[in-house]
Image (cartoon, rainbow, N blue to C red):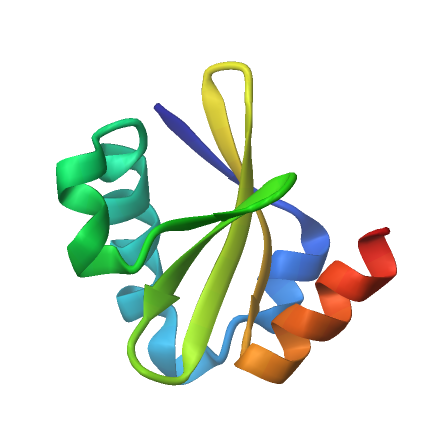
Length: 88
C-alpha cells in the first residue's frame, strides 16, 4: 500500500520526530484491514478518517484513497479535534 502525505501533514510533522512518524505511517499501512494488529497502534475509525497513535502525544489522521493511505494531519488530541470539527 502506498503512503501519501498532504502539504498540511508535512507542515505538521515535528522535525525531531520524523523517523518515529514514518515508522507509525508504515505500521498503519501494514495493519490497515487487519483488526488484530490495530490494538498496538491505536488504529481507530473517526469517520470519514482513520487515526493512529504515534507515541502518547501525537495522532496521525489519514484516509484510504484507492490503493493508498493519504495522511492529512499529525497533531495532538486538541489539534485532531479541531481538524475534524472543521471538516464537517
